[in-house]
Image (cartoon, rainbow, N blue to C red; front, side, top):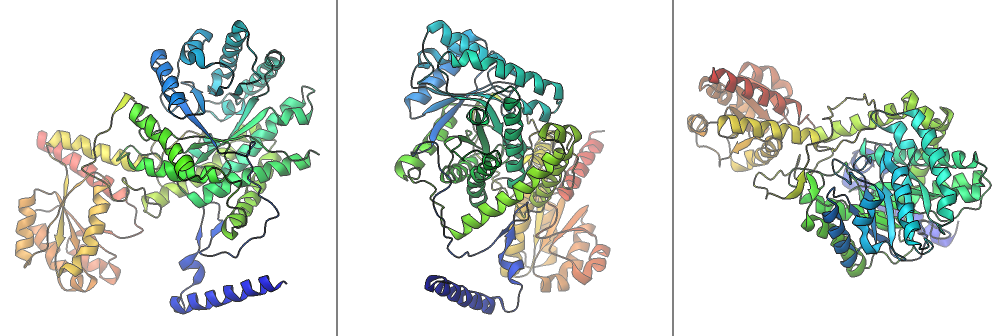
Length: 623
């Protein structure tokens, strides 16, 4: 052990002694170590890591590329977006087909040669960086692009082109067709000689982990899914008598970037480490790979969508520092429909601020040597490698998808995450935490309905890798509350029955306000009352159909039962108490309290019951 190692160990020991003193006997792991959905521990402090060299290296030693989605069905609008994006800082374009896994209800519906040429106009020329993400229409779109290039007679040598053909996406689709996988592989490889005659040197196939992430996968599961997909592509190319050296050069990779900065950064770094391991196993010298990132669909919200700007900024930062070669930021209104120019401009400018003002894209692997990032990168890589080997043992990704093992694995994680969101252990700012009832309206060019099924906490059945946003369940409740508001002419309201001193009721009143507002309830607030009679009278005047008692445990012991009985006598049908009941639960229920809300309880189930009861009341009143 070197002198530096000895000094570091001594400092670590001293720090731990001081922490234990503050914890006063509390468990260090329970208090200060969190765990990802892969079970990877995330500690509060790590010793410095010694790394031989940076490993999250881009294909080129420069900043990440700014790629903008072109997903307008209207060809003239799409062409205008192309001109604006390339003229205002974008480095490349992503043509998104309407049936692509990442279309999310919008996208280009006509991918014929004439339509693509109309969209691109005169930008389809040397110097262009272009990605196709057209899903099941990938072959048709590639043929259309080849037709355009051949007709104009120019070389693809100076065009950075990624055809984005993902045959395995068909096996993972909601109505997956396993036989389509082989057909798409055959067609894509048949295209290769024709593109090579045009000096094509880009990527044909895409190992895309984003569908797994959108369906709820953990970081390691997304990595394993991506690597398994790339290995399946490698085998298919080799089976057509191409060398492994050539085969790997035809593959690009794509991952989702979400707002967990630490894990996202480590995930992007781990991908390169994992693929290098595959290359070594194939007898190849590891070489840099082309990695595209896109901010995650799963984290996008429809409620108070301006918060998506902050989430996307964090995600872009993580992916960029993690070594993404190119990056697409979903506009902040993407979950609501086709984004307008404001949303597209904010997405584009987010890159520019991070790159040109913060100068964050000019260092190779800035996380190298960080104890936290090196440890998490290694942990994710090892976990992903184990999952990858499980997929391989099942016969490869196509067989694992056909057998349902991948869907089952991801479904379990999705259920765990949904439960964590419902219990607010995974808060969603603007939706489940700090909802904004006065949120400003935002515009989209073409609204789309919510595409995802609402996931109930604990629901692990996932027949397919369908995308689901984490906020969808809360938004569904809010939409139900909006419907009741239209029926009744006013929003269903919860009265805060605050009693005792302000210091007694204020913390729990704030919690109750957040708890019920996130489900779409109006909150009848107040500054407390001098007497129980005044509290009950205020409830009657409020027009609320439910009341939530808010105070301290000591005040509850003295007054909760009598306050509840007073509210029940005044006609309150739903009485809630903010806090855990403890040994007094039976007495509280006898007094008319039907539910207890507290940190860690399910924030979806009881509000849903309240809204359903409110709907039944309105139906009865209308008869």
